Image (cartoon, rainbow, N blue to C red; front, top):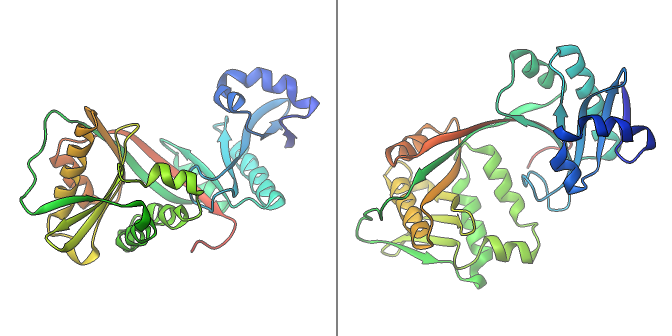
Length: 283
């Protein structure tokens, strides 16, 4: 299998043949490598930099695998080439993500060191009205000067949640630039949840797209109904901001959380599987 960089002269005619399939990549001006067999492009490795998934420190390069092939042998060749480029370019990780993988694809990915690290759903709900919140629970906005403490609390509350990918993302959030942190974590997006003087959880919302970025309950208080109450508070906050529909991501193995979302009317709108190979041990 031949490997060509996107800006090589031999790649130009091949890119034209597949341009409709990779238009977003071309629009971004993102560098990529083509994997070519018998004058046919069978896959790509797109080179991106964090933050995207935040599975490595901000600025780190990673490779996103794109396959145009269905037969197992061609897929193996694409993965062989991807792993070689990962090692040659010292990429932080490889990721291959889509809605469904066949058994044969899974086997090939695992043989090349990519493991299923994320099986998740995107869920959404219409916010028809404000939800009733039990008396005594209060959302308290995070002050900018206490953001470091908020990030420590968020990471601590996610420990043991079973969502390894989210835990890793939260670990790497600290490496983001100050400007990016100002956008994600500010007094309009980030909240402590108190019951009297007791800190019971935290919540982070996306004010620009109606998303719920993070909900976490103090580990010693899990299973006591706080997750549903905090979620209701997050939905009320989004409704205050003018959103009529909210969305979130949830690990497919997190049955308790999914049950809460189902009870509040959330429906699954997308499913995602991501196989990942890390270049270095994950913290």
